[in-house]
Length: 172
Picture 1 (spheres, one colour):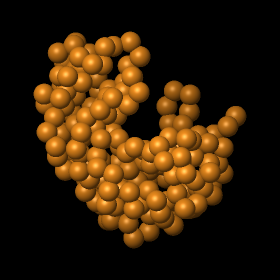
Picture 2 (cartoon, helix red, strand yellow):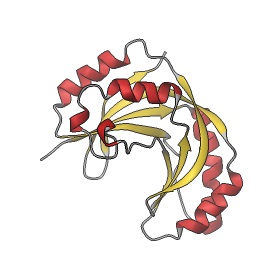
Picture 3 (cartoon, one colour):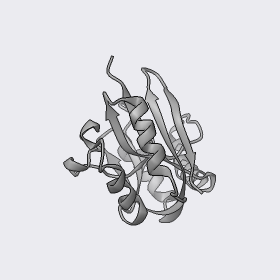
């Protein structure tokens, strides 16, 4: 079986609360949802040596501090996902580029630096059956541009129905 490992930036509780305010628009449509675990995937590896990527990530994380992001827009990613999209600048871009200097060839097309397709985003709602146009319209009424904070970095192995966190680092 081919492994899949995700590297994510984890948001602080205050940022999650702001995102959950936007997600309250789901109440209008009687859609049940759990509190958000706000994060931004910055690498999605396939068939990578897990021990090597953990060691690489530990070294990368040394000295990294928490940092702010500017959440500037809501958007549809594909026709199935509504996301909050932060500005692709500052530390989020610099750290992405630095991290991808090694092992980039193991990343999927959406996170591989070579592809130029990576768009940092925080997924707010995913559905293959709902009319997301109406839902994003309601969410837009609650959205105002805001600052958020990245406070942790995690690596997870993706399983069929869930994931296993194999490395977690609080950013000082």
